[in-house]
Each structure stands twice: as C-alpha cells, then as structure tokens.
Length: 352
Image (cartoon, rainbow, N blue to C red):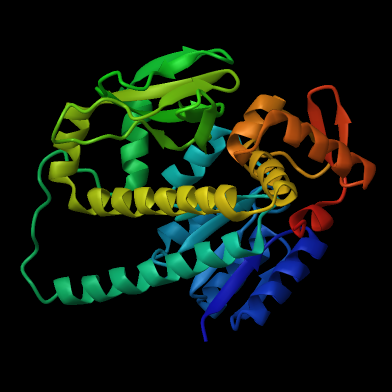
C-alpha cells in the first residue's frame, strides 16, 4: 500500500482529501502546516506528497525546497494543491521541481489520476536509474531539454510574444502552420464550420496549454481556426526550431506525446457527449466544462456568450436558451445578462 502525505492547513479539506484517498486504498498521513509536514516527510518517507502553497510556519514552496535538497527525500514525487491559478505561480512551482500542480476546487478523478500517474512515473524512473547505474553513463546531446516543464520554460524565455483581445483570430483554418504556441494567459477556442455553415467549437485551451500542433514532416495547413475568448498572451516557437529540440530530447518527446494523447481523449469524450447526450445533459456538461477551463469556483459568474455555449454543446442556440431558462427555473443556475452562476453543482453534475 502506497503512503501519501497531505500537507494542508484547511482542516476540512485536509480531512476530506485524506478520507477520499483512504477509500482509494492509500495509507494517508497528514500535516496542518509546512513545518510539521517537513518533519513527517523525513520521519515517514511517504511515496508521494500533496501540498498546499499558502500555509503558516513554512509555505509549500519552502517545503518543496527543503525536501528537494535532502538526498533522502529528493526523489519523492511532489504535487502542489492550491487556489493560486496565475501562470507565473504555476511556473514557479514547476521550476522548483514539483511534478504536478492542481488547482482548487479539484475533481476527485483529477486528484486520483495525478497521484496514480506520478507514482507510476516514479516507479519507472526508479527502475531506469537502477538499470542505468549498471551501465556506462550516456551523455545527453548538448542543449537537450530534460522535461516537458523545461520545454515550457524554453517557450517562456525564448518564444515570440503575441497578444490578442477577445474575439481576435489567432490563426485561421486552411492557413499553413509555422508556429506552435504556449498560452501564457487567457482562454482560446478552436473551431470550424460544418457543411451548413454552423460553427462547431472543437476544444478549449487555457493558460499553460500548447496550441497549434500539426505535422512536423509537412507544412500542413491548420484544420481549424483559433480565436481568443478573452485577452490572451501567447509565446510562439517555430515548428522547425521545436522539431530540432525534440530530436535532441527523447524524454521530452515522450512526455509531449502523452500530453497530446490525453488531449485527444478529452476531445473524443466531448464529441461523444455531443453525439449521444440529451440537450439538457449537453448544456449542463458544457457549463461545467467552461467553469473548469475558466477556473471559476461555484458561485462565481461565468461570462460566456450563448453562441459559444451552444457551439461547444453542439446544439442550436435557441435550444440552449430554452434549457438555460429551465435550469434557472429549477434553481440550478442564476442568469444575469451574459453571466451564468452555478447554484447547485451536485444537481447540475447529474442532469440527464
């Protein structure tokens, strides 16, 4: 049984998360602040650490710094769990060596998935280190990056910066693709027109997501358009330069493949929802999806056009408006102009 250390000063969240993980067959130890968390990490040697950032005594950054510098704990996977959602905060945590960064509020499946993947990766790396220790060390090519996080840092440091306001087109369907982008801030939708001229939103991308991948072998045109849904900032690297980086860095290439595979899975799930779900379920799931992408807590207004909601849900705008009115009447949401505020999250999640 794997052991998880939770370092969190919010007692209710700490206890609820511990109970959730115990039900998933993990041994859980907890700490109410960073100082006690460091002590328990040294004494218990957990298999993974899940840690808040803003805490008394020692904050999460301080915990990660101490554990990273000690040879006994430096290999323990570390996941930040925080309400901080700014790109610079996420980058700071990842730059310090964190393995993942989850924002509050989080879904149960999201936390479990992050823990499982980091534990699996730790086991693989441990086995490789053990095997490699028996072999002659192989030097990395000069300039090779070691991780997907270092690739994102490269975009931050070396990429060309592009800024767009809400409604601006980032790139158009049919235009040849020469750059790949990392979103620094804001939300972007990708979309295309069906045969009847109706817009279909194919995906939503937020800060820290990559955007604009097409073939590295051929100069293929984009198969969809991308438009800013709010003020956005992007960092772009030419496909030629990115290809050179990936050719030197096998580990980064594999991580990027995993990331793109996950993105394809999410898009397939969205398309299945659009094809087979009821109008009410499509509408409910789309509202929840926008809330997650825009990183809005329950009770915060989601400012989004009815047209965009309908495009993501794959239904007519008129049908969407009728469904929103029904949700409002049932007390699931509140509507104020373009703002939609979730009133009953649990009921909205189980709409059929």
